[in-house]
Image (cartoon, rainbow, N blue to C red; front, side):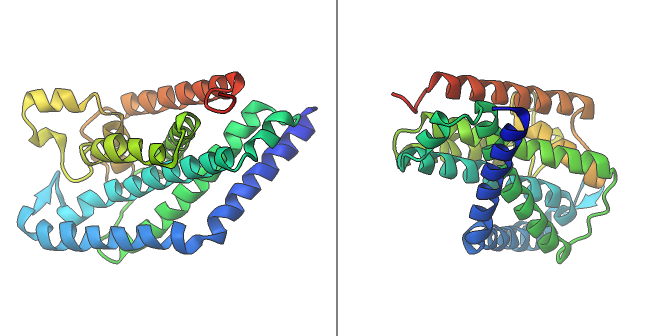
Length: 257
């Protein structure tokens, strides 16, 4: 298949994933908006009054970037893991594998679908956040680039989860026991500078910490870690997960078993 054909196949798969997200928008876009509204009401309004300021900002304003990125992470991941596993379960993934469609287009097509859902949810949650606090946007380039790269990373993470999943229960194990703890311990609701030294060092092993702080820097101009280091971590995960996805699909892991 020539390059034009490859791009057409990629566009077709990407459009299918986009249509899937929009067709069930009540399930993909509305629940995160409701969930984040509750977070803002409970943590921001009720608890935030007692906490006061953090890093020079009121608590509601401080947690808003983290909550936005958290919604992007969970929805980017969840969209791809459910879409790809459904394709495996219903056996129509095999049609793509036996077609001239290249493996990279399969990976990128599903990744784009996850990114679309994650970024759409991020925009919805941002609108919700503006009803509760202001978002000044300190550096638009950093904010936009970090949220796009993060959605790509976790879309690929969802794809790898789906490749190894053998039953529907396997789809929820990683989000429940790995992704959720890492997200909540990634500085969404607090500054790691408040932690004891050993806990701060332990937190540096959490990749989500770098993503949350980089996005918070883009929005508010404050961060607990170096922005350069954050970009290196995010790009390393992006390249590593993309390469791993290609290798797994090429070898037929979880597909031809």
